[in-house]
Image (tube, rainbow, N blue to C red; front, side):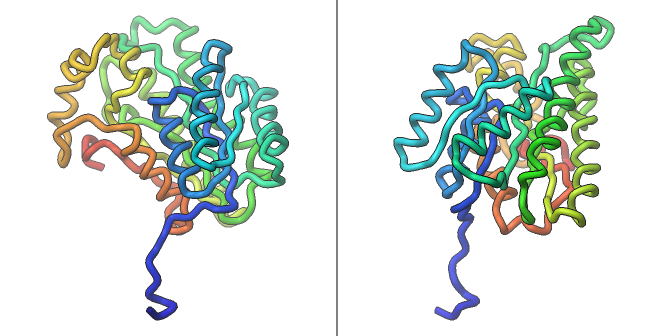
Length: 272
């Protein structure tokens, strides 16, 4: 086989990744961490509250059991000091001087509610976690990110759909989309770093159940049925692995020419 006809791979060997909001073993963040680790990256698992520490430990244990290098760190992404801690602990615990991949997966929604019912506290929290948090992590991580680094913000199709019961969340995610493009412009030529948004559609996770007030998969499917009906290519809701595999591609060297993009991972839901 000739040198220019060797099978491709998505190896991340030697890369170091931070995945925020990755403590829930069935969540999108944990699935992303598994995908990156499975392909050779050392991964820092992040959790927020003491109540989620045991789940974060299970995610780390699972990664390590499969031969991956992983550790965990606690911190509130909306607090600049904690953002610095997350980055510094990654460097220390993973024994490295560089961070190649930052996945801003930590996000939050108050649930389904009318914009007229949004309190100042709810509005502030939606923007703090979905916009300020990613920015603070970027500010801390980029000084340690080499040429070819990857920043991947986990957004939402809500930023494009104008959903009447998720107006504030959609607005926060739209602000995150704008931040993605601005950061891509800022770091592309000067640092060789790509910045993209991966925007999931409906995905059956604990967080999604909570947002919709669903207590079972059957109830979740009923809630999301109208959204599934609008997809162009898939007659189902997504899985965490659907999102993780796309993030893996964007994190790989094969996506070196992709930056400043809103990439919908929704089965065609947005039509964008």
